[in-house]
Length: 507
Image (tube, rainbow, N blue to C red; front, top):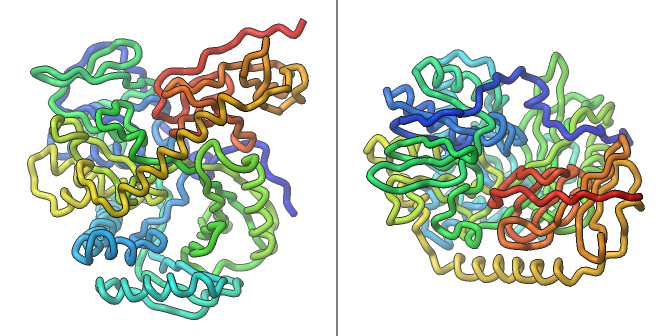
């Protein structure tokens, strides 16, 4: 079995040069402030800027360094086995609307690639959800019946092109894949050429509401504006208790080279543990992306085991020559599995949110850009009610609300009661762990140079105790999914404040 790379780096970010933008260091005034430099924020800013709207796009870190930069980049309306479930909860009309929204997003990407002549390896592929187990067969049959009822172009087959013992699969025809960063970097170029402003390393901290809105950055700069579109994965400004209405999951990806030719297609297992497979044309050779192993953030087995499980699966499926890349991504799931896109609350009609894509950000993020730009421009959009963040369906939302928040309470208590015996000096180089310092819980990581990085492990969001993520070398919150670097910097929200660093001397 090939060894795992030591660096955690997605192929997408490693394969293209990325532009850099300055930090906002003055107060400014624009029509719209867009918060978040992923596919949702960039698409929203692109659509507004090309209509003559004065836009400022603000990113807390670097553009395309969040979930968008760590995707598998499938552009598809086949979001696992979802359509039978949507019909049962919302009815056939809304289930078809969800499919239409995703297909509209796919068409938008295709037309943008063609009209802007973007070289981003865009290519049409069929998408498969398959099973190798007879226990999952009834679910696939029901999903196919949903396809037929909704008029989705597809097929029900008893084998797939991959060397897997699949007993059945549901196929969605004419889906697509691409290189998301080369696509989005062209949109960034258009935004700048249209007069839009882009700022990196500028975390947004608050929104002041008055005659006009004002986004307040962490370094106390003001962005006066008429509309704010929050596209920051988890809303940095949570006016709608979103932390209690979503849960965070991590999933993992390997980029491998193999001896066999790839037969084409994009694949996802209906069985657990999840397995995702697609190919990438990379520098004259084919890179296979093997993904899966999803789990709630900060929970479960040591995270390096998830990479090892994907490596084992890849070796069973192909003759693996080399594992070139490994990375992970974080995704948010709403109570009813449909994203929240639109006004944050009924009382804040000019503050918008886009979140909860459930691992399907390429189509959902594009649909968000289309919907948010239409709302800001005062245009009709047939998907407004479907995605409304103010919606509430008793089934399944009530059950999922209690399940999610009971899980939070369990981990909040468990973290506070966990006995800790390890000491910082016990750690090997490259190792991190929860440790005891003067009888109190702390987190320590010893880097390869032997330097200790020690932090308070109490999450700055709501006080849950963080767990060490050895696969990605981060501190992760099992309650709401916040993530922090070894030095305590916020990597992902809902937390907005860094961890307290602890000075520790072994002598």
